[in-house]
Length: 307
Image 1 (cartoon, rainbow, N blue to C red):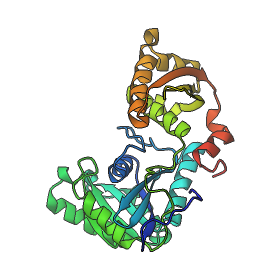
Image 2 (cartoon, rainbow, N blue to C red):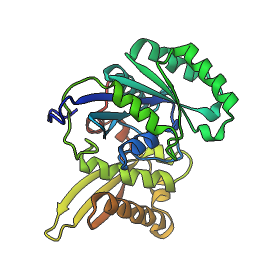
Image 3 (cartoon, rainbow, N blue to C red):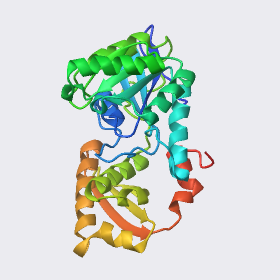
């Protein structure tokens, strides 16, 4: 978290709010909705978020610092262990915890029950947000709410659709009302503490996730190698896409370079919208077999390499 503080209005309030849940529960979608700007990547694939992404929202006199955590699941390798550890650390550090549950799942499975037990011992204050409720009959929602509250005893339950915004305003109003009194931790106009280089890399990684299939996206990472500002306001960004095997590199590039060209065009357009200036994006694809075991990458992501 930034050390820079700002007083905000008189009688200001501030809360760190951790968004937790299983992969694909809708945490990143809710974060972007709450902040009113895209600060966390969203795809249809699970385990998209690798690090803790902070989005900052103002609600009356309250500053809400949302932490979009990696989904909690049974980890299988070093990166996944670090991701899950980051999620649980965010829970313990937060003033308020919002547990998102995909209402379309109808009932918690063993993995969800384990998360709920963890929340019971690690979260100081927690609320339940049943997401995607527009696709579920009300009777089923009441039964599901009762089941989940039996497992974790939430202070409040909110029925929301993070995608279209239904019920989100009520959730934000409650969080703002419960925020402890104290100075704002970020300037009024800041919406994220994600460095621009990392933000740009995340945008490109999102486009790779959306254009590649099966397991390939999980075998890659993106690094912003160079960032050059020009007098006309434009920026030149050089990024490297690292993959673990030569066969993966060929798939990522595509026949005649079509796949990586499409990714570059989509990422460049997204960055131009977010940065509000011309962007010249250059992508290079390389093989680095053991990038997943490089401690420097974990440090850049804010993850514990030894988790």
